[in-house]
Length: 77
Image (tube, rainbow, N blue to C red):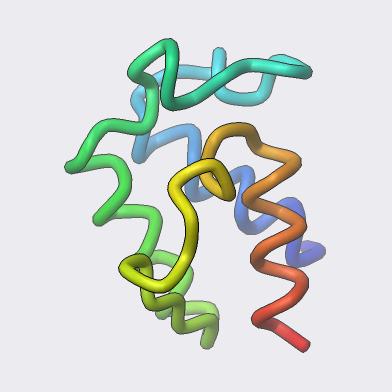
């Protein structure tokens, strides 16, 4: 499983819907990535060895699956 697939696999149960995988879905505007889902995502990423400090990352970086994947790629280095 690729890193991208792993992140997508984290997002679906965290957000509780497959809608997060729709191209262009705005996870924040559509309230798919709420505070609980956000914490679940961060914990899942930590399990993959990717530590994010959300207070240092602009909220918009979590707006879409693609923006989250780009962020994860940066931190996975």
